Length: 154
Image (tube, rainbow, N blue to C red; front, side, top):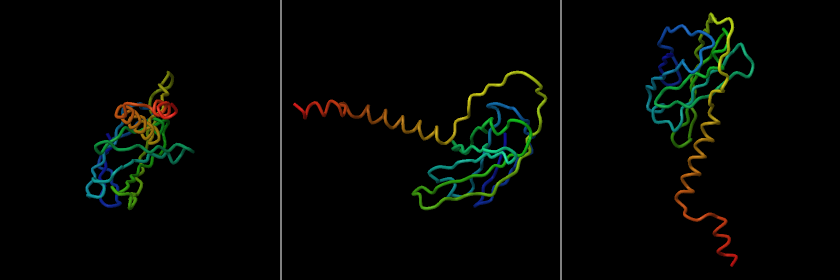
């Protein structure tokens, strides 16, 4: 597990774990949020960016200060940047951190199939929340808009 500490805008890596390429659904990142601004933020996201690959950047929302590292950024050996962003509870400000560079080491895999299901990003998280909200509203309202229209058209 990758472990980090966040104080103000300073992100520091705490572990010395050697990260090996091509791991899937195995590596997690844990962030110790020291300041109240980080702990009470409405949403904190971790960004994982492969500096040696184009268009390989994922933002993942933290749950209880941690998240799974997207497997896409662990493909092949190379360099990975990690940073955090958060928005204050009332959207008044956005706080960012410096990036921490992590070396991804080559694995011993020479052949074989690896699952390719994409990691969920912030977009999928928001769509999931919207679906839950829509279902909740539908359960609260006993009549549909179409049924209301029919009542008034009679």
